[in-house]
Picture 1 (cartoon, rainbow, N blue to C red):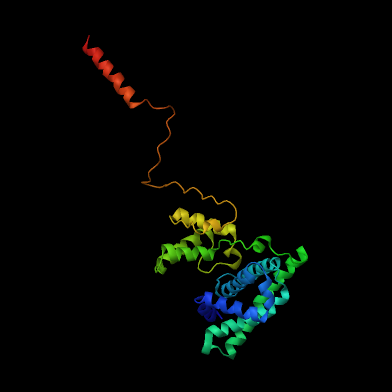
Picture 2 (picture 1 turned 135 degrees about the vertical axis):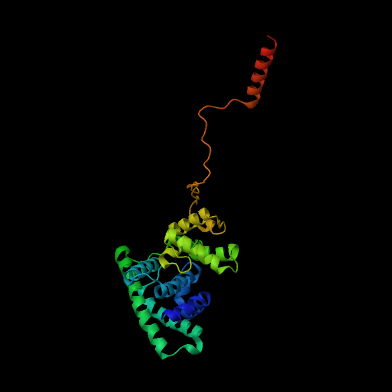
Length: 267
């Protein structure tokens, strides 16, 4: 499964396209969801499937994360019964991208994998329903307002600052992950569009010297960059301290000194 998901991860955009097209054919009701006919929600499902197979997190962390994702899907109006046709669409999309390499063994592995994954998603969805009652679509989603995401940050870094420099981009992603706990290359689905996580990543990138103005406006609410930390350590230049009293103007001091010299000369 990991090998299969690694191949699909390299073609994530194409995988998501196949998945949405297949799901819309099997479940036309998906097009009634907002925003954009449920496409962002389908993209979230694709990211969840790939992340859960490739992450190094423990099974407990993965299941808890999937539960939170299922709860967020419920708030967007996605009922538990839809996870079954989602599985069919997922297998169709994986089959389409694997082509001739697809066989009965790989199909069985995908069925078992999705059975486990959808169980965690459904548990989170049911827990959210028990707390909130009937499904209520998310107001922000209903307006169709775009939001920033870790995926958008990575795409902007790659296109604007590191075109064709994957090794340099990987180094920056590693530094960001060490400081924020967010993996830009394979983000946790519940972190991908979290405004607080995205803001933290943008802050760290700014401190490292990389500004992404095209991503920042997508964040809801005012965004204020943190002040970059002052340099420290041996050899670091320290800013001058503010004087306690205003210094004497250079011109006044020079004039006073000339008067003193002329006074001595005339004695």
